[in-house]
Image 1 (tube, rainbow over the protein chains, first blue to last red):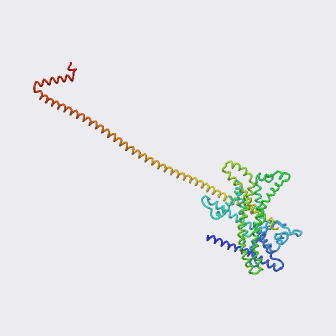
Image 2: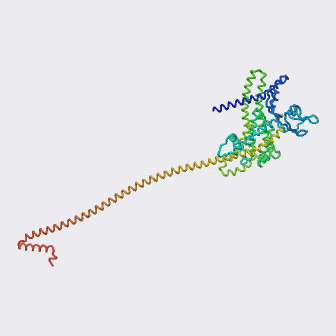
Image 3: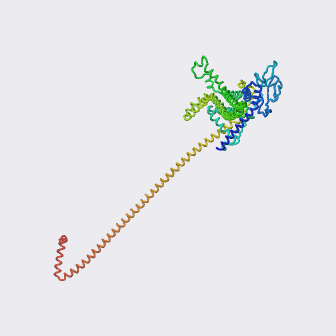
Length: 401
Length: 171
């Protein structure tokens, strides 16, 4: 009990420090901007907070860690573009001193903050841009963590005999999580032998999202990239689920979409229900994409907004500023804890819904197997129990939405 | 709005990274773990089933043991009862035999006594006959001292004997 209390206290301290670090990270910029705002006179600080906020949530060609005095601590990242003059590959630090090989960062306009070049008529156009941006670097680091964690776990299983030893080290940490996702989510939603086929994808998606979510909360270098709060990332994940659902779906699934069990007039002259069903194929992964993106991005935005309050209240005097800072740090800790919870919940929800959608695409086969199972008598309650499972997460899905 | 527009470069890298991660983990990561967990789960459930079976066997053995003990006790009781019965029988038989023997001996003794008595009586009778003959001789000798008397007696005796045996007297 004593140890747990000590752990909790140290966790709180660590979180307070992390919030403080985040504040320090955001601080100089915001302060600078406030100063510049007060110099320009008419502008309100909200605009600066907004740009700071979007700077943190969005993507960039370099990894800005912090600023000490006037010195920015920045990790330059490689820029890879295919412009009108061919392939270019250079570090982003070269862009700081004006255009490099005709390429420069756009300020304002359609391509604000992106690398652009000028065509013959002087319009800004975007070259094909596959730079290793902050988010790409973050994804790479997080993916490396995921791979190392899981391979470390599987290595333990390769080296040890599970029948003789209880899992230790990383295997002991990950095994309950893997077992939980595999048994309670994947096997519960996907009927029969198919669950084995889809388990690697769903587990990978779960750990990929979880680690990216958690690393996004960490404010200092290896973390802090808003990866799962970026729509490109969630889009890719949603497309993977879309492919997994529709590519291997059975006849029953397609029959339910194009010729569902509804009165004939709902589908013959005007294919009302089939149209809705076809739309449903796309809205399901679309909802997955938006849910994950919006949840994580909103979490980042809220934490950053809380931290910004400190710098917004500087003008109001030390007493209010101090009080607000205290409240802000308190709420920041609260939000950070909430975000840790959300990080897990969103990874879980994404995996569960993907599993449910995949399960629905294989439902028909199960109904074919069921009568055979019920003939055996003893298996019947079990089979009916399984058939209820996909519905339960479906209800929960409705609640979360 | 830029937040809602997926960036091509990020999309490309995300796809590459995710597919690589998926490939690596699907090949060397999760199947190994899930297979091992499955294996252990099966092993545990098998062990549990075995343990349950052993437990059942054990309780059966205990029951069997109890049954055997009970039977042995019953057997013991039965044997004891039988032994007591046998003892009683033997004693009774011995008593009966002894009684019979005693009765036989008694009977023999009685016969002997009877025979002895008979012989003693007959001896006494012959003795008495001898004595009475002697006495009669002496009495007769005394009374027949005179001839007259002798004659009288002879006549009397002849008469008597005729009376006693008329057939012999007629012939």
